[in-house]
Length: 166
Picture 1 (cartoon, rainbow, N blue to C red):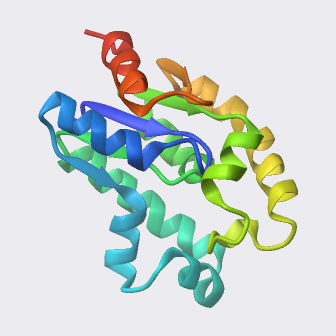
Picture 2 (picture 1 turned 60 degrees about the vertical axis):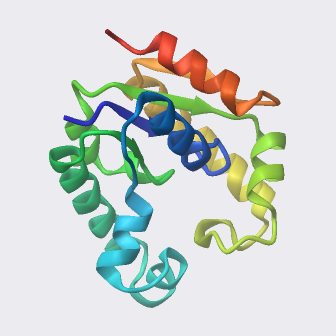
């Protein structure tokens, strides 16, 4: 069973902290966005453009399902993975950590010129909208909530380790 599942909006630190956390716990790290790209044979942004968001969400749900069943380490989910109801159900009973980030830090980390498909038009406004819409779902699914704003990654890893259910 997956030891830790990291959720949160773009720029919350899921990949960076996931790798550090896996290292700290002597586990492997897996990112469902990378899994989706491997299956599709193209970047997430290309899937959105060529196949549409609905197809991406299907691939993403399948990647989460497979990872939760197969992966015995730290798992990072794409920011919108939690939008799929069946994915929400799958996360029940798993140690889900919500990495919360404020808009200013998220914008700084994501970069407004990034290739994130849902942030193409008016990226700052889009990011705020995504964060506001998803926050209640992130909060409901999480067994631990960690605020990442202006904090050192090593400090955050320690907080996660201490806060995880035994």
